[in-house]
Image (cartoon, rainbow, N blue to C red):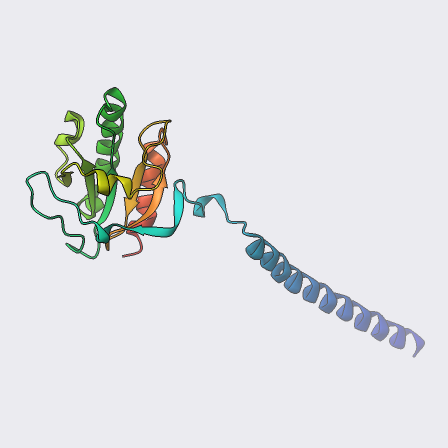
Length: 191
């Protein structure tokens, strides 16, 4: 009887240890997830490359005009995202390089390319002219001034505009076009 009682006691002790261990692993993982969540940590794959603007800038208050003088409508399609570039008048070689990168980004969207328009304030450089969804906007100092950090001494920033006309993201001058593509690809999935 002594051996049976001892065996039963050992089994009961092992069961308790297993239960406590499972409890610790389950609630420990939940506690770790809570700490990571509330500390602001995010996996690298979920981070934006561009700067998320808080609050977003409402461009509907100053609707732009196309180069031909017609008004540009923000509500053309609920799924259309925009890449907006507002370079200074004397942009030169920096704008040519930027336009080449934007043309490649647009092509890489493949079947989603029709859901991305490129808005260029002023006359775009030749590499971008072949892009079917390019919209040339008439120069407007007031419209340009509404964009945050537009006169960056480092170069020309690129903006992401949502389907309703809100600037939600700013990519710093010299940012890799692949980062812009990554951010827009994530946004296009939100359809």
